Image 1 (tube, rainbow, N blue to C red):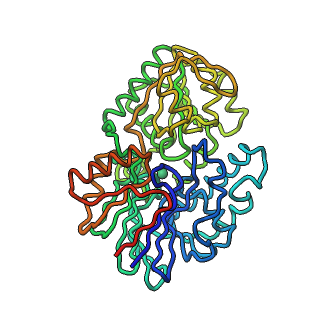
Image 2: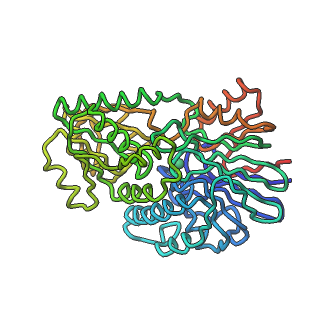
Image 3: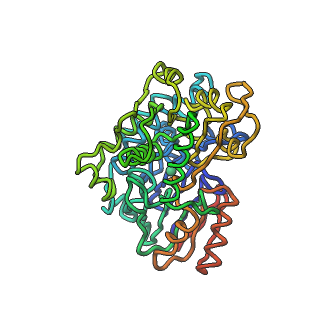
Length: 450
Ligand code: ZN
């Protein structure tokens, strides 16, 4: 008998945290930060639902902060066991945890006591990582083992196939949206007793890959034609590298003229360096391109602007130009400065390629309001606002359903990691089309699996 508790990302998107307890062994799958939550101050500082000293091991699906962002709090409160993840996830986690604490410190005016953990809790956390390669079974205790499979969501991301007291549970982590320019396809499980599946896009269907590339091509053409500025808010990793890859491809096939392209995000620049470190995780196409001598992250006109001074100088470059800037949901980050400048310009465009949480500036802009507030200023919105869902790093409803359908022997599916409506929509489709038992667990609830 195994107890599975849904301690985060239940009827919400962020804060992934699932506890598997066999009675003798306790393993936590993900330990994420709750993000983008306006009415829940203190939610990340509240005590864990368990004693961190009693946890035997943590398995981390991938480095995104909503999956790994509370690991330093766990370590600060006495967890001394291994944190298992792929080597790429460990490197990205080091980068993202470092950044996350700085962002949080900025938000609370430097008051460390208002935060879930302290700046110097990050290094010991990173030191507690133990790397696990895909498809290699790792024994955590006499009654628990796990195997990671490529989730195709971000470089190094994993699906966790956990066997606890003989019960096989598949945790999707975040599932990718193949085919992608760089990553391998999402793996499926052969068999599982229970599945815990994400549902970020549980109620949506994305454009296909060719359509998204055409849309990108069109919007770049249009912006260049009007001599405007194309702004793209990017998450530090994955989307940034994918868009770079696509731009590289469009340039090399002479489909777009040479215009200045800026990667205006210190994080994205560092993440690109980590990408270069793990070519063994790339898909066949990207591996072939590298073997043929192509540098995937370099083309004429492309500049990286790590410093604030370099970032400010982007304004002095005459349009047309393309700016990929940090602040994926436009909650702060350098993209906000560019938005302040160019949202009022009817010749410019804002292209959104990633998930925008409810309440974020990116989400509000998608509704094309006449004006928005940025840095306490009213900003008139005249620029074109476009979104391409196909670049999402998350599987859509069809992809999620396909993943759920693959394994044999599934007794029940737990739908997590989605806004409630998205989770409920996926649950309904699973029930209607597969006849499988699917539920959307409540936050803090537990089930007994047998
Ligand atoms: Zn993710």
